[in-house]
Image (cartoon, rainbow, N blue to C red; front, side, top):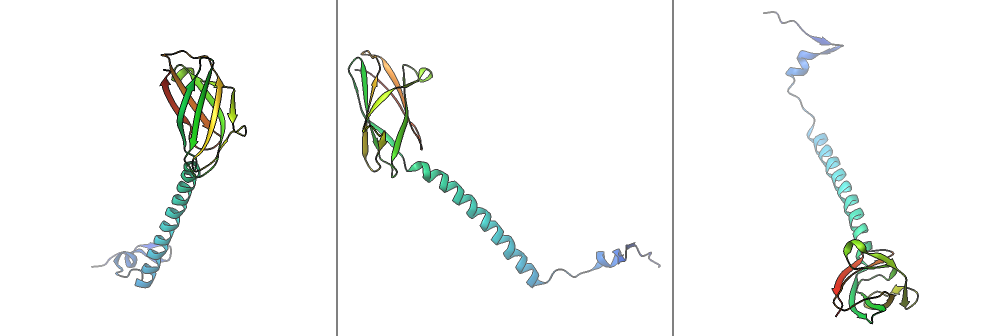
Length: 154
């Protein structure tokens, strides 16, 4: 029986479809190595980017150690348990989370810097306060996470 040969350009389609040959084992091995190396490089770049952004912030960990009230002022003691120095940027106080307003404060030390590894700072804010009222606080450093807390004045 006569089979009509099909041609695509100068290539015999029938021969291509019936061919039992594949790529050589050496070429297949090289191709797998190239794919594996590319996957490793992409994963490494992602991990380095991810850890670089999170460890830069993790070096500053602010913790409230005490709050003092005297009717006209509130004094907040803040400790930095992180590994990087923190500079306080803004202090917010309000009677609800939605009413936090930036406050003018004095700092001890006046540089607003809380040293790493247990350094402390005393923040004094002129803010009228009354016994039995819940106050909300948020302290923002220039870098790193904010310190937010609330408590009732006793």
